[in-house]
Every structure is written in structure tokens, then in C-alpha cells.
Image 1 (cartoon, rainbow, N blue to C red):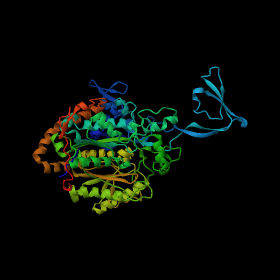
Image 2 (tube, rainbow, N blue to C red; image 1 turned 30 degrees about the vertical axis):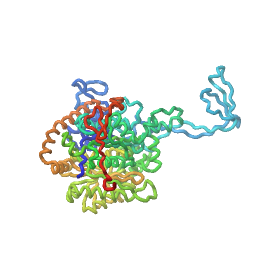
Image 3 (cartoon, one colour; image 1 turned 120 degrees about the vertical axis):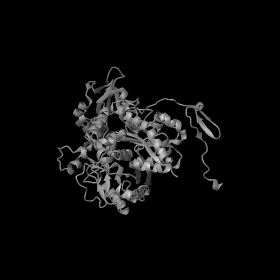
Image 4 (cartoon, rainbow, N blue to C red; image 1 turned 90 degrees about the vertical axis):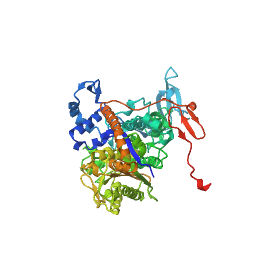
Length: 640
């Protein structure tokens, strides 16, 4: 029998804030939360942005002045709300009104004569063009030289322009992950990885050393990555740009740019992992591809603990240029046209992403999301929190294509399989009445047509009427590799609070959207959490990468564990879980008080060959109690 991959921890950082404690989810539905929860979420955002911290029993604002917490939060609530989620690009990453670029120009000498100018000798090009005539321009030959160029000369002139797209899902204003640990010029996605993975580990409520001493090193795996790699200046971007900008390529540009580097950072600087690792890169479906890998590790019994995630930081000018040139992004002019605004009027940046409504393109976002999976036996043994479980993840390609970016048939297959797998666990009526869909919902005209048709067809096939559909990109934008991680974090919050985030940027469903069997939620909807048993998460990626996941609610997991392990085992788990729940709540409170607990263990407990001993049956690591078994199983016994 397959082991059940139980979600025992989750964490991250997105435009909605910190994921653990359901804080980012709560930001999405903050307008319908009770006052206490809303205040707690704004405290989390204030702590992230450096506006509020607790020291020595006193609450201090960003200037170190003592404040009364609740009153202070009330005064800055509107500002905290304004500086989260999708909004106009802020200048902490780059200035959208002053984008640097080069413009080709041809310089001619005055009156058809030679072009003459002075320049520093050390700035002469190498090699000096053969037709340049160089003479001394100053008494000191090390300084200025005089240059005559007889022919017209091609040059590149530095210029500035305004961005065509100025909407994005940005991390909360004031939050800088690189300031929380010695980031040493790490690319932004790796900085986000360190924070987000730390958040997930702390959310366990179980000390990692306890897990490490309970599970053999080769039974822990990490699957994480970035679909686009690390393309900002500290990664591959700097490697490609440095020489053209007159700078030097650093020794870090190449190694830190790889797409699998988030997993490598987690292994090396957080967990000290010796088990399986890697990254499945699948464009916008990357998170679910990695979740599938982790799920299979748990189901097969080869691994007992898996950390799965993705980190993407695509908010840099070149990425905007690339997607905008494809016609994929919601640019300012198109948003103004949608709303009947003049070019002089500001577009509604907050409503840039409009899934399944009248729309004009998707909105880029940055995010890092991570989940911790235990097998069901380990979850019970350690008293772990149970936030849900991964029932199954299905991946299908699109077949033959005309355009590499156009959709195909694969997502029909993956969604139908996810629905079928959900029905197998919660039954026909469970699928029809107690499930909903977290749609990919990018906000493009093509997606609204194709994805809605897929969902409607699947619903009809399984006899579902009015299948609720939500789309959280309307809040946080499209974080490419991490987008399904944003959907999963929102799903776990939904299981806990029962409020489905509405597609609040859309006034009406577009005419070309299929919805005979679907119920697109344009406003928040309160459900009874006990009546929601499964969420299907859908993800579609460029190139024909489709993935759909079936995620089970905690009460369904409880029933499954009781059937497999018995009520006595579940009762014992509940007792152990009380301590774990308290530890998790304590971490959430410390984070809301501005306590930084980012894990970064550089040059920590680095082991050499003398730390390992082995015989022909096992390998022992000096500081880890469980041994690594060398029994790999005889898979081909019947063939020998």
C-alpha cells in the first residue's frame, strides 16, 4: 500500500506576505476577516516591512519610538494594504520611469571633416581602430589623448525610457530578504529561498534536528527550483551584462545562476541534506512537477521527508520586455483601453490581472513557496501538524503544436485524472459537492477561453454542476515557477478558514468563457471548512507543460489515518500534536513581533571523509543516528 504524503509544514513569501500561519492567505481575504484576525495579519505585514517590532516587552515603530500596537496598526492599515499584492511597480527593484538602454548613433565630423575628440588614454578601445589618429592632448602622456577619426563612427548612446508595463505582484514594501542573513550578493530568488524555506521549516513546530535523528539521511529529499533561473544581475544576468556595461564578471555569476540552485541552497545552508535532490523545470507548472516528484518519493516508501518548492524573481526589465514583446503582459495602454481611460489617466494597477473576465494579459509576480511532506507514519510518530495531503499530481504534454506557447490537449487529460483521483478518495458526491478548483487563471484572453473549456468539460464529464472556481493570481500575479505554490498556500488557508478568495478584479465573466457547469467566484465566499474535502490545483506552462493536483483536506486525512492506523494511534498523535501546535503558534507570534529566525548555516558542520564509516550493509554518518542502508532491493530477480 502506498504511503500518504501528508503536508506537515509550509512557508513562503509572496506579494501577500508570509505564508506560514496562513498570513498571506488572510491578506487576500482581509476585508471579510474578523477584526482580530485582520489586525494579526497586518501585524505580520508590519513586521515584514520593518514598521513594527517588539523589544523588551515594548512595541517600537520603524524609528524606534514606542507605540501602542493596535492603535499604531490602525493608523498604518491603509498603507500596509496599499503596499502589498499587485500594485504599481515600486523603485526598490528598478525605476519603471527610467529604464536604461542604448541607442545606436552615427557620428560625423563637422563639415565632412574628421571627427575629433579628447579622451583618457586608459579608455582607448582595444585594439585601437586602424584609422584612428592618436596624439597627445596633455603634457602628461598618461592622461588625455587627442583622437581624429576620418570616417563616420558608430556609437551606442545611453538613454532612458518609460516601461510599457508598470503593474506587478511585488513582495511587501520594505521587506528585503537579503538583509535577514549574510546574503553575499545572492540573486534575489535565492534570498527569497532562504527566507521561505526557513519559514516552512519553522512552521513544522518540530526541531529539524529531531527529524534528522529520526530519519535516515538518504530518506530525505529536496526538490525546488526556478523556471527562469537566476536572471538578475547577481546571477546569469550579470554574467551576460557585465562586459557590455564595462564591469567585470564575478566568480559567482555562473554558479548562482542555475535553475536548480534553490534546492542546492536548501541542502547546503539550511538542512545539510544528504538525500535526493533536484529540480523539475516546467515553465509555469514547475512547482507541481516538483510536488509530483516529492509525492512519489513518499508514496513509494523510498523517502520519509520531502521539502518541495520553487522560487522565482522575474521582476527585472528584461523579463518585462520579453513577455511584453510576446503580447502576454497586461500593459498600461491596454488596461487604460479596457477601462475607457485616456492616456493621461493612470491605469488601475490593482486590477491588472483579470482572470476569466475582459482582460488583456497576465501580471508578473515574485514569490517563493515551500511545503514539507512526511509519510503518514512519521507524521503520527512525531505528532506533526496535518494541513492536508497530496492525493496525486498528474502531468501531461500537449502533443503536436503549431506555436510553442499555444495550449493543447494535455491539460484536459491532467485535470480529468485529478478529478478521477479525487473521486476515488472522497466519492462521487464528495467530488460533486465538496470540492473546488484553484484555476491557473493567468488573466490572458487565451487562457480564459482554453482553461474554462477544460474545466467545464471535466465538470460535465463527472456530473458536477456549479463547480466553484477561484484564481489567486488576481491578488499576487503570476510568479511563473512558483504560481502553483501560491495556489497551494491559499488552499491550505482555505481548508483552515473556509473563505474562498474571490476573483475580485472582474465585474462579469467574459462572453467567450465556458461556464455551463462552473461557478466562477467573483466575490469571497464563506464555506464550512468541514464541508470542503478536496481542492484541485491546475497549472499550465509554456511549451506544453500541464499539471493538475488533487489536494485533500485535513479532515479527510484524519479519516484515512484512522482507517489505516486505528483510533488509538490517532489519539496518541493528538496528544503529541498539542506541543507541536503550540511551538508552531509561538513561531508565528515571534514572526509577528519582528523576530528574524531565518536559517543560514554557511560553513556549518562541514563534514569530510573522516565523518563517514561503512561496511557492505550500511553507511554511518558521525553525527546522525540512523544509518543509510545499502540494501537497494532486487528489482530484477525474475530476470536473472
